[in-house]
Length: 282
Image (cartoon, rainbow, N blue to C red):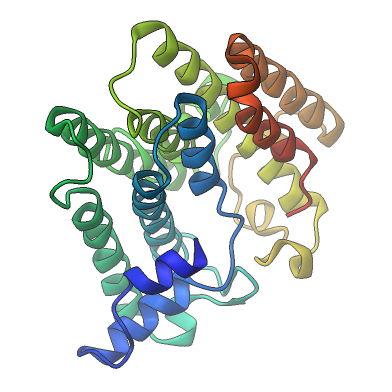
């Protein structure tokens, strides 16, 4: 992914040099790459070609990095550290960080819409539709809006999960479905299994994020630990103890793995990623 993104992003010697350097700064040299891994894992389940998967994985990661760049801005979560280095607006400035996010989002759709990416044009359009919806007001951006509006007040479990299904889960769902669509059109049964897997995995990922934010260390996480509590954010730990939250994440992962169990060996990578989500320390 690092090699592919480095080749895809405009070189820092190309005008406007500062913007292109900042785009590379946020996109390269760090991150778990969970969403690209999901693209490849879902693609492996259907035998999709690697080149097509790499393109789809880059598009998803560009959307994710754009969202992180904007989320860190003072008008959003106001963070100073991301992936173990200063956030974009700290290393550069706020205006550049805003433009970096805009440019990365545009590049994601440029990459995914390139002619000939998929032999079936209808499927390629469906892939674009999936990614656009996941990034918009009925997906990631909408979830961030709910997050901002809920700061300082209590949410019940249903409200909290509504927020995270959009803010975190939408792009995870898109990554899984994009990987599968790289192999061709999906039958209804397989799509339903992948949808169930992605929903449970996305929630478990957020539960563990909340636990690690409270219990982890900045040096390990690569971002400021304890920020959620300091900002009065609604998290799973405002509703349950860390031990209960870990147990809940485990239940969600069991649900995710059960959804893809009929895939057998074809779903092995998806199952391994699910296990990583609850065992990770960053």
